[in-house]
Image (cartoon, rainbow, N blue to C red; front, top):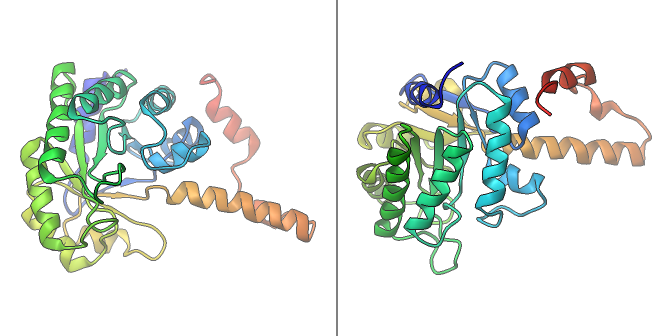
Length: 274
């Protein structure tokens, strides 16, 4: 049985530029176990999927306690490393971010995503200085726990900010200096821009992929070290639920259900983890 420290070291080692870690993000214990059983070398949660599964909207609305409890269920259900999406840290200040990190580490996570989006409405993104302080607090909390946690700094310039490569690089550089192990830039899929970031940031680069995005080989060729599907898998699952309902109500047929994981297989997978 591997220790949490072993899993943390393994997770860090999986971030290889040009040979990226591939993450089909999970949103509950069952989806995490399905992902792991399908051969994934690690499991990462999606904050949006987790929030939706618990009846909450995404965007720092869920709270640290619910996120921590979900991480604990996921970590208990799989043997591979688990990384937790903790959004903005579920806290108003850096001290609170450190507290959240301690809680998710205690729940079994070995990595976290921490984003710089500002949900208070003051501005689209936190200032570089404020976010650097929050990242430093996360790093300190992990160090105090004795876990070599992979701290993934999410830069939201291409989601709600300037969409400027220069600002993105400035933020990424500052975040790495503050203690981040990797940089995550969702919304950016321009291959030359990704190559520039991968070359200049000096830390593993994570991108968000999905339907219509460049394939793994194309992203790997730019030096990307981690590719996540984010909330896309959860969205696809909910899409199946909607299409199955519409088909049932409109035509009385069930073709949407083709390709489902069979009941005996799914039940056996979860046996002993209830």
